[in-house]
Every structure is written in structure tokens, then in C-alpha cells.
View 1 (tube, helix red, strand yellow):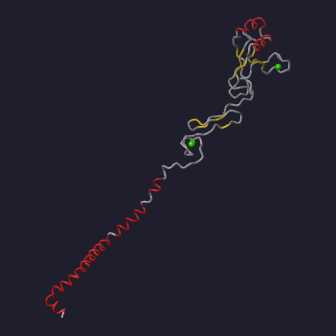
View 2 (cartoon, protein in one colour; view 1 turned 180 degrees about the vertical axis):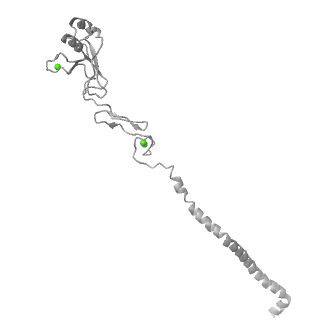
View 3 (cartoon, protein in one colour; view 1 turned 30 degrees about the vertical axis):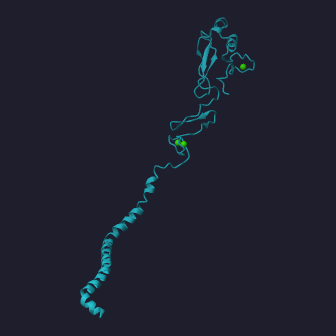
Length: 209
Ligand SMILES: [Ca+2]
Ligand SMILES: [Ca+2]
Ligand SMILES: [Ca+2]
């Protein structure tokens, strides 16, 4: 019979063939076995691989790592930094001051507003007259703009030297002061308004506007 003949001749071949086929399948089985080995390896490796996956998932943390360098726009303020991320540090417009003028952001600090001018421009000088030797004096407006300091003696300008010498402390000398382009204390009330504390003459840079 086939099995007999084949069995006789091919008993071993059959077995071999069978085993061959089996061997083939066995090879595949072997492959499976290898796969099984790999499976076995996988059983060992998958965990690391499984560990790798989370690590890869955990590899997403670069997102928070990338955040710090990114400029987060906020309102620009005077602090030496580019708060609104437009490339300009403290790029702020001048801030209007209550008493006029403006305040500026300089080196991360806001400058003070100009000093107030209540009576006169701080630091400005007007001419006053005095009973001393020269009969001519200067008064400087105080730093707070609240008024003038003492009338300190000074030499009269050449235009008024003769007048000072001739009329001394007089309305003529005050008139000479006004006529020659100075800002002069109206001690002699040249404008006849009864106010001897006002200023006459070129007082544009001295009187508060
Ligand atoms: Ca800016
Ligand atoms: Ca800033
Ligand atoms: Ca007057």
C-alpha cells in the first residue's frame, strides 16, 4: 500500500518526509519556536519595550522644556525688560505730568515729573533792586517754584551803570532794567497797579506760563 511501500521505502523518508513536512512545519514551528524564543525574549524585552514606550511618551516632556525661552507677552512697564515681546525694551510713550511736561522711562526707571511752577520757574533769575552799593541785585527762583530767594547784590549791566550811580535805588533804575530787556521786580510800581511784588519786563522764561 502506499503507506506500506512508501512505508517500506519511505518509512524513514516518510518519517523524514513526514518529519520533513513536520520538519518544514517544524521549521516554521521552529520558527515559531524561534518566535517563541523571541516571544520568550519578548516576554523579557517587551517590558523594557513597554518601558521604552512610556519613556517615549515621557519624551513629550520636551514641551515644558521648550516653554521657558518663549517670551510671554505682558503689559510693557518701565522695568528694563521687553515685557510685550515686541523687541523693544521699555518702549513706552512719555507720561504726561499733572503740572505740565512729561515723565520718561530711562534705564528701567520712570523719571520724575518737572518741578512745579507755582510762582516762578525753578532756577530762573529776575532783577531786584537793593539799597546797597550797586543798587542792582538778582533773585533766584527756589527749586520748588514757590518763590524767589533773597535779593543778592550784583553789578548792574553797562546800560544801567550810570543810572544806578545817578539815581541809586529808584524808579529810574527799575525803568532802565525794564527798558534793557530784563525781568524786573516792580518795586516802584511802574505800571501803577498798586502791585509792587509783580515782575515787569522780559519775564517769559521766569514767570509761570
Ligand atoms: Ca517692548
Ligand atoms: Ca519693560
Ligand atoms: Ca505793579
